[in-house]
Amino acid sequence: PFKYKMDIAMDSAGATEPRCIDLIETFNYLIGLHVKSIESNVERGYVRIEGTLPTGERTLILWRDCDKIGYEELNKYANRFDLYAKEKTFDVIYINGDHNLPTAYTVDEEDSEIVRSLKIRQIEPEFLNLMFAEEV
Image (cartoon, rainbow, N blue to C red; front, side, top):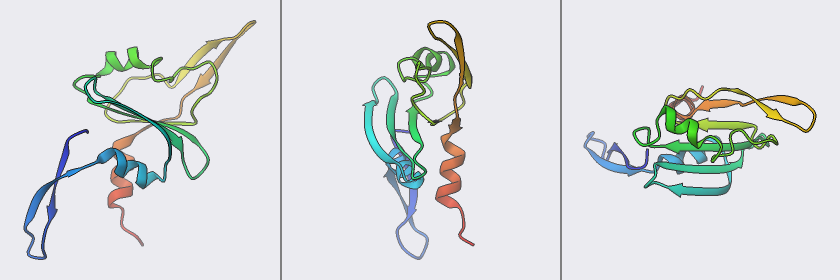
């Protein structure tokens, strides 16, 4: 997702040219995210964004190079990305690509265990819907 190109129409005759598209900034704009912080480590294969949606929901967005951070690696990064924090950190989590992250996890409290759930959404369907949806 970090070096994405699209063929963009350059004139009314239909001629196109490949142009670099910043998928990350475009997605932030499309969902109306008020960005709080961005942690970018493209060399390791991820960009981590925290912010707030117009609904007030605290949001985490994880963009990853799926060749560098696949199923197993994503599970290893889960704590690093604060997915399973003791305190509920995010209301919504967006992740690109397929994943096998559990949406429920257990947190040990002093005298009991609490089950928390994650509201995980895939970026791609949301992106396509918002980018190319037709107005009625």
